[in-house]
Image (cartoon, rainbow, N blue to C red; front, side, top):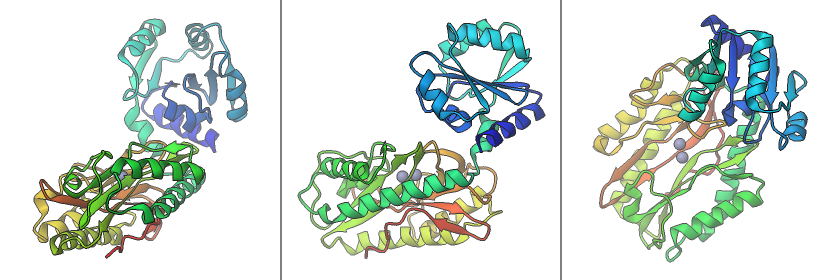
Length: 354
Ligand code: ZN
Ligand code: ZN
């Protein structure tokens, strides 16, 4: 499977006239070689792959990488890269230009001399945009795990408990369910704080008759889940209820529209139109969703500024929201797999809480 990914990367780069690839980004190291450590250089050319590591990672990399990867511990990364260039004589090396420090880029550019570095993040993203069987299985597992952990937390969601305490409990629950960690700082935004789309958990206590929004995700085998649940505490007002129902209608309309061939812009518009017709268009400021995988936010972008269309194998979020300053907000989010005929929901917390 990893061999196939490397082959597809090189085919794509060769089609752009780029005859080699240098990878130091952790996400792509994992995706292309299986190596999960923090530092290494993968070099791809002519169907071969070398992974340069230091002494910390020789044993680990040898165990993690498939037999198509030659793991080497050179005297230094610099000598390793130089000797690889002398063997393979690439003219141009693609690299992940969206994830490199400028100092490292400048160092590499000097070391490589006449071999030029070509930014290839766009092309490399297209390779990862559709998930293969192993990735779909990992994403299904992590979504189920996080949803189960959240469901176990629901009885503790009541007035008098602080947002941050619930965030901590949720992280413990995820770890107990087998997650390797949390995918991002959880958003727990209650009452007026619900108007903050990215309101990370604060010391605020939950109060009776308000809403609380949880946006949470776990990591398992490098893959992320992403789900948002908005719950009522006690009996919130009719306005709260009608806003919740509008967001739910928008999410259900968008989910029903998920199928191969719909453009990312058109899918976003399905949910946006529901919210606009309900009179809250100005309060839905962000895009409808994004891809999820080895990164919490990856291609495609489902928004008015998105591009491309849905293809089976994409794993995306559908997350409309309404945020009213001074009043509060609602967001509902599921992670779904795009199938040949529609979608399969991977996150499982029921959203019919009223
Ligand atoms: Zn989320
Ligand atoms: Zn999301």
